Figure 1: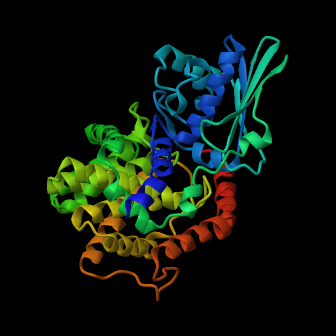
Figure 2 (figure 1 turned 45 degrees about the vertical axis):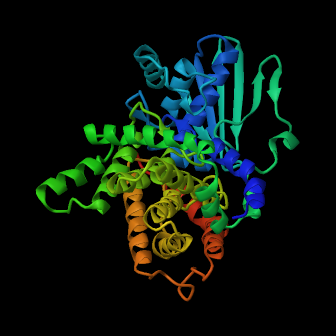
Amino acid sequence: MNQERLQQIETPLLHIVERDVVPALGCTEPISLALAAATAAKYLGKTPSHIKAKVSPNLMKNGLGVAVPGTGMVGLPIAAAIGALGGDPEGGLEVLKLITREQVLAAKAMLEQKRVSVDIHPTEHILYSEALLFAENDWVKVVIQDQHTNVILIESNTAILFEKRENECADADPYEIFKQVSAREIFEFSCEVALDKIRFIGQAAELNRALSNEGLREDYGLHIGRTLRKQVGIGLISDDLLSRIMIETTAASDARMGGATLPAMSNSGSGNQGITATMPVVVVADYLNIDEEKRLRALFLSHLMAIYIHSKLPKLSALCAVTTASMGSCAGIAYLLTGKFETASMGICSMIGDISGIICDGAANSCAMKVSTSVASGYKAVLMALDETHVTGNEGIVEHDLDRTIDNLCAIASKSMPHIDRQVIEIMVNKPCP
């Protein structure tokens, strides 16, 4: 890549990664509702007597069955309650970082007394959360829309305190640059950008490794990572690099989905996507004893490629997004092993030919299984590429060009899979209580 082109795309690409790779405590959909409730509580200025919340169908899907960190409970009602009683309105995706045991007990009491309700709000916005808090004769409503922390309305019984007008909500598309770059340029940029400008990405390894260690320390969720590690000890699976990638990546997802009170470094608004873009690269870099520069470039490439692919998808969809995040880590591993774009391209094409049909049926402990499946596919695809073989443009939705292949996958997710999404949501909300 020539210097003029590098300088032309440097600022917007760095901004995107700095914006989309941030710490997040807990699954980001219930956290978004917790943030709305915390913000409403700030303006209410007193302890709420009851809470009425509304969320979009997709946010309901991703909040029904996931643990809320620090509470020992799952679901959106506890997220709303603890957000209102103990959330930090300035905390962003770490809104629940400072909650106390007393606040958790008070939040659980609100639920037991049936003073918290969460309903589906019919809206065209895929990501929408609304918290309406009451105290005596006063109320405050806060609405978050389109992005997990994007407050568009703060209203009380006396006045509208803050409102983003429709034209203000439609900010300039931060991903506009992706219409002007190719996957090859994403790869080359990551290889050539000044190291000091991407050194911040090292925090992703620190946070997500700590989460992985926590997931291996004790049982969280389905404790898949610990289970696989136990099978290594028994001899039912091998102690090889693939097993280590699966175990250490999945353990981080186990801990996150199981309610661990440690932040994940997220990607595109998702902790699981951040884990999936990070841990396979970290494990391979450790195994190969890679130097710091190459390690950081591989991590940056993984996260940027994951964002690049995910930017072509709806914010929440029926396509499991850890699959696209693992395509990012596939590129990062390819860089570590060969330094060649062609290896990454073949690997991602093979992955699209392999796991493009995995659906998202809501955030839950089972997400860790999809993480393990996706990272295994990524490593397998890289090994195939090392042997100069891959799913070709003669097969299925894969084309001879990587960018066209990515566009085909994202077109299916954007145009066809919304029908699947509606069916999934209908099934989930109509399940009988156990």
